[in-house]
Image 1 (cartoon, rainbow, N blue to C red):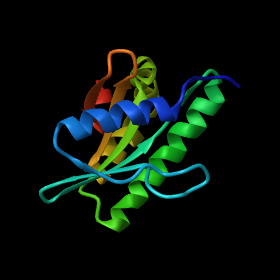
Image 2: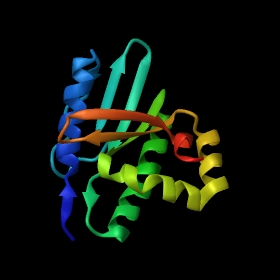
Image 3: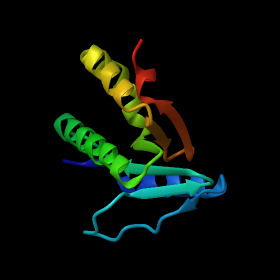
Image 4: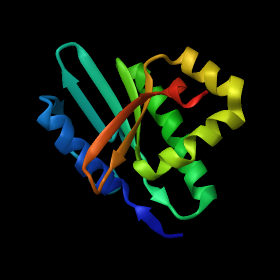
Length: 138
């Protein structure tokens, strides 16, 4: 399956933007290293970010999204004040449909994890759109 937007490209934009906003960032993980993709801190805020690539296969897309979800909420154990799934902006096209398909479960996830956010990273424009989990529900 082809990777349309790599997680590395997403992470580069994310790091550049967060550094510009004054966040202190964790070092970039090497190939094969495990752990949180990006930890951004400022003041008392500790943002744990899992970065997901955009693949051409719908099944791979779903697997990556849900793996990212479980990885990021597990970061609450490490003192995260905000948990973020950072996705290529392409994901934004399908998220309303995905959220609508899960309806009540999607809402309950957002209620259970109020610190959970989805950030859409545009690797062309080099921008980040920050959204709450439940903002994708009508």
